[in-house]
Amino acid sequence: MKNRKIKNIMLVILFTIILIFFFIHLEDVVKVLDFIFSVLAPILYGMVIAYLLNYPYKLLYERAFKNMGTKNAWLKKLRKPLALTLTYVIIFGIVGFLVGTLIPELSSSVSTLIDNIPVYERAIKSSADSVAEFVFNITGYNLYEFTSYSNLITLITGNDTTEFFKNVITNFVPSAFNTVLGIGTGLYNWGLGIIISIYLLSSKEKLIRQFKLVTVAYTPERFHKRLFKIADVFNNKCGKFLVGKIIDSTIIGVMCFIGLSIFRFHYPLLISVIIGVFNLIPFFGPIIGAIPTTFLLLIINPMEALGFLVFLIVLQQFDGNILGPKILGESVGISGFWIMISVIIGGGLFGVPGMLLGVPIFAAIYTLVDEGTQRRLKKKQISADEIAPRSEDDLPKAHKSFKENPIVEKASKLINKGKNK
Image (cartoon, rainbow, N blue to C red; front, side):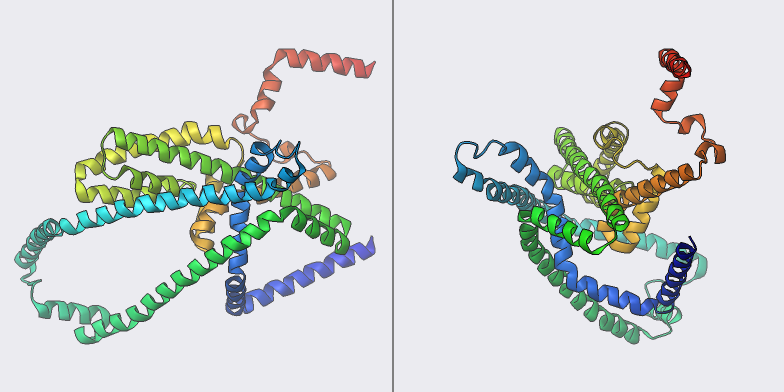
């Protein structure tokens, strides 16, 4: 008992030292993590792709080709490569089709924007004239004088106009170069990630077995049991959520396309794909998707943009109250507040992927913490309701129905009488 207490104290001290070191050298730690991530990026991308494609692969391998090779052994050998090949052909074929279809529509919308530039220019000039006249009547300050802008730039930046534009150009060129370099690096990482995902998916059973054998061989029993439990919870939460969200967003995208086509909105396919893709992001996704699509229609016709907003609100209400709960069910298991928090934190740390994966990861952590709390309270022989009683609204439906069902109550009384006898 004493040795266990000493061990726990040593672990707390070690954890505290690591935490202090982390905060003292936070900038260096971030640099090291950034370097490690940049090196491992293709592998991480490959793991993400393999994880997502594992579901259609399993559907083909375990369902579509289940009876393949029952009579001929040589056909059984083709089962896995055929399922793997079809998975990549179907998924990337759909992506290629959408990209190939969207580029002409996007090009058409850009052409429309360019054609309407004179109209926008006249509208902006008219508004600018009105503002300039209003300012001149009140202050006597002429906004169209070049010296006015020079003085304003000097007032804001502390530099003259020439120096200001020189700084803008100096900062813009490296920024543009870094952007192009980042796009090239991203394409390289994703391309290599696709190749890695093929190897991961084709040999996943072998890799999982090797990982389990090494973990069990080199770690204590308590540790690897807990590790496998955590991995199972994360896989269950992330898998169900991602598959459900993809199905939900696909249905919303198709419904959006049908609705826009019926009401004869411009660019129905382009807008529907944008809405469907951003719908993958919980909570904020529909809002983010609505901004570029509404602006796109606003360029053509303001009234059409207003009608689209009304249609989108109705569609999102249907998704949030009917379709989403039917498909996702209790796969998340956390309240709307925690969903919002997990999306904000995940997006702040890892961008769009963090916004998508933040919810199931947080849900998995929430489940593990809740199970650990219940286990510890049970060990201490303390009831959670004794510490903080739940309201009637927080009680599970099954719990309410158990209390309110007279048949169940009578049955429980009979059982208790039998036990007493």
